[in-house]
Amino acid sequence: MLKELPKSIESRSGQLLIKLGIIKKHGKGIYFFTPFGMHLINNVKKELKDKLAKNNFSEIDIPIINLKNNFDDNGFFVSKDIDGKFYFTSGPDLYLYEDFLKSFIKSYKDLPVEFYYITKRAFNDNKASEELLNSMVTEVYKSFYVSTQENYEEKIKNYTKESLDFLKSFGIKPIAAKKNKDSQGIIYGWANRKGREKSAYCSECNEYFDINYMEIIKKSGQDEEILEVEKIKTPNIKTIEDLQKFTGIDIKKLIKAILIKVVDNNYVIFIRGDRELSKEKLAKLIKTDQNLIKQAAEEDLEYMETIGGFVGPIGLKNCQLIVDEEVEYIRNGVAGANEKDYHLKNINYDRDFENSICGDLVVAGGEDLCPKCGSKIQLHNYYKIGELKDNTEICDKTTDIKYIDNTGREKLTYKIENTLDLYKIISVSIEETEENLSKLLPWDTQILLLKPDDEDACMLSEEIYVKLKNAGRNPLLDDRNMKVGHKFKESEMLGLNEIIVIGRRAEEGIVEYQNHDKNHKAEITLEELEKLLIHE
Ligand SMILES: [Zn+2]
Image (tube, rainbow, N blue to C red):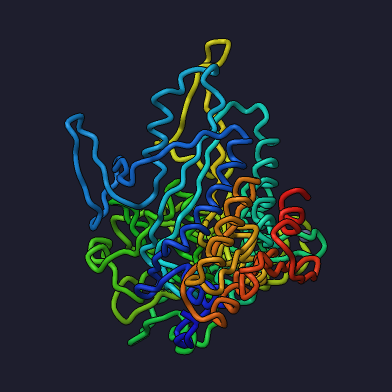
């Protein structure tokens, strides 16, 4: 168990979890929890459930198949029941439980509703790495609150605080990144240079923002005379960088097109050449779930009458144009001509983007400013551990839940969704410091039986185990038959505060007691041990 580990283990938490036999790797991003490891994950769940029960949440279980509603997506298992409802597997779990809620929320008397469930989740496009920090499959807790507007703001504050406290209870120093200035949504995270997500930190406001959500403070437009559209030959141009090199034009004047498909609808999004599309902002603008946003396929491009690498706003067919607000300010920009090897010069928003939707659609960068106070920001990497969605983010028409208020009028409910990733909690806690492992484990004391084949020692260890159990403590008895050196090494890695070593003086009823917090180590009798551990 303690042999040298392959270099393919990328994270400190992965090292420890694999060394101790808590998880076992099956494939890239795919891990088993061993019988020993189940104690850890079950303990995290228990702590969470206890906390939720205290806050009056009820647990429910939702099926892993889901209501298909009115979207289609190849690759999902699809079925139809006798009532004519369609279902599919995986993907967003929103639709099914919304349907469940609608079935019994009729009037204000049915509110509030506070439910949660714990479920497995698999990621389609996950570039799995760093063991449980970015695994293909994880387990998440998700709670949801549905009520009237009353107490809504207070509830959000409450959930945020409770979630952060829960993370702190495992030794994590979390950050709460805001989504944008006006949203009450939060991303719970852990700042670390290796993290995949990026936040923008404003030292004036002492506030983090997630760059996928943060509003872009608009810069004023370029003051230039609008010119006639001109076609230019741009052979073999594949990317925006190629185009910049070829034309020598400032990248902020180039207009990048991104082609996506949501269900059966094609969208083309235009953003400035130096920007990246934020799926989060796009999902909110077109009111969809971001898991449903897919890249357009070759046949979609044909249907829109365009060519990859040469997509532009003029002459596109069968799709909705969406324009980022920054593109509005570009004067005489360059975009594709929807024709192989050609681009168009002097493209201008007011004249050339017919029937388009406009919005803030890009990921914030280092040059952007704090949306609250306009100061400079610093970008920091972080790991996302969970998320709180406020009512404005759960605004799909299909998920609206109505109720009749006490005057007989129909009203919309207010909703909050709160999610935490349990695998992330485990791995981030250990990444913070390996000593946190003991906070994740259910045990408070370890009994180390050094010679399991010695009858006296065996009986003594069992006696101590039972006494501790009866006293309401939670001991771990290591009675495996293995080398003493390995036992001590593993015990050190587990890091429980109190350790009882049953060794060579077992016959005399004497054990070694260690308390790490108190830096105390002594050989004591069973009686003395009882006083120390049970009656204190
Ligand atoms: Zn600020």
